[in-house]
Image (tube, rainbow, N blue to C red; front, side, top):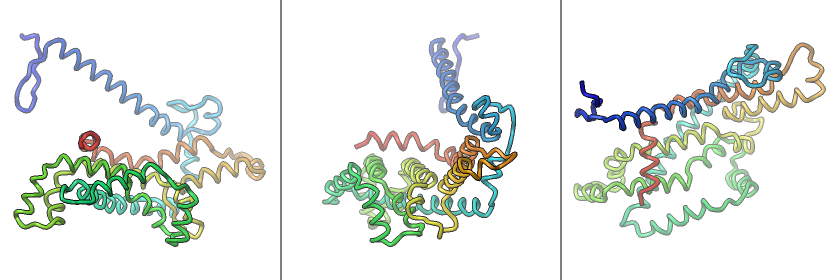
Length: 307
């Protein structure tokens, strides 16, 4: 029996000697340990969210709580219509923002890499220049409220996250890897610029779309700051992150108030509530990553080094 191990690589068999087998096994072990290290904090958050506040105070955060409780989740889902409404608002903003943002960023990146576009360098510099400086919160607030009149409007949260200079540059660099002859062939066949973009360019940049789409979706899903600035009590359903943030703040304020100290037999959760809100907020978006994982590394790597 041969001491070398045979592995199949795209229909062919490659023999691995002992050194290759050792390196591969060592890599698997290191990768498994790293994966467990990444999984452990999330597992700790999930288990701690089911612990009682007293057990956290006594023993700290443990992988298996000594006392279990669902009180934190009961507080979060105390008003089911509010949490469902927040989920609906966040999902709609995430889906629409990701689709529209991807389309605009892809068109912008495609235009900026076209050799026959005379102003591509000036516009690229302008986009890059805006990423270096920030006017601050006050001018941004005045712009959205007084100029655009978007106070108590979901567009005040939706529009700022639609595009990003870094994502435009990433898309532009990725599209640069596409041969210019593809565009020329479309022109020879009589296709217009928009048809070339839709039928020839978009199908070839799926890894970039998946990568940038994930970034945009995470930005919308985790958004709470603009919601705190522009959405007041007139808006019934807030985005999910801001709604959970408000619950944590209200419980913390009640716990430190005189009314909270007078509660008998009720221990308001503080740490466990934070863990529960993290689980509620991150659970759904985690399911998105496996669908774009195979495109993520290639899209990010190619877009970062090309150009």
